[in-house]
Length: 400
Image: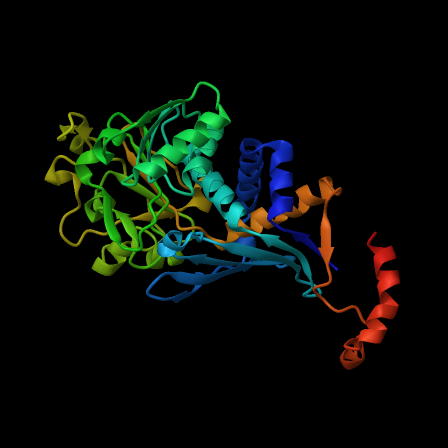
């Protein structure tokens, strides 16, 4: 028998402790696993692309436990009243190969994406960051708002989406949550939303090379949390933001980010450095021009960008969390977390779910996903309906 967490059970577990605490505890589990980064087998996720979206498998293992997640991304699904993203995951015992947990991961993917965004921001944003622009107010937006309010201390949210109904939905849900001391402002454009923001989160859904943020919108000291670019041909930031000398870029797993993240734009241009690097001091003298909306832009001078052919350097989050690389050099440096979602995030989530499920056993379910045989060498006999019925009472007693 295999532990099972469906959508109803997941709702129950989250409601018992609240989404903010769930995200905070999950962020702790993710940090614990990233700190033992070298224990894990890592590879870019396997993706099958189509005109309408992508279906992916995301596996990893630490030698004791193995996990994978099945996930899709189909931005046009909402026109058919279907979800853009759906997912499920499995946690298994490496020693036997037996699955331990089968879980829904649609809700969990949203929760863990917000958790790792806020975890990274805690190391990369300026300590006094209180204002966040949230560009893209769809399915991920509430989770980002909760995570940054709880873990980073954001108290002022500035919202914009090209779909006004999405913003209205987000504002309704935030009003229901009643997050303490949170002020929410609805803005008329991306430029208005990011003006004066300490943190900018982009979480848009279209599968295209979009330009949600341009260099003139980025002020010195901003932290950019780029969530929406998560597959080939799907980006949100102008490439000049990525190639600026005063931008520190952090990713989850660089080989995957080169394929699916914002830095795929640099990869295509051959303008990305090797993973190992020596940190250079921030180019403070290139900051301070005023942009079209009246704030100082981090990229107002040509000198803010590297010379033709200059390579952009990238750091993996594990190195930041382990103290091997800084998340930020100074208060004027622009930082970018180029998050595409990595299998280790899901491994941590499944571990956390298994523990939470065990701590609250009432209401838990188990399913007969794997045959239980009197003779493990006689698989055919186990297919007999009569023998299965004979074993059923004993099985019910064992797992009652």
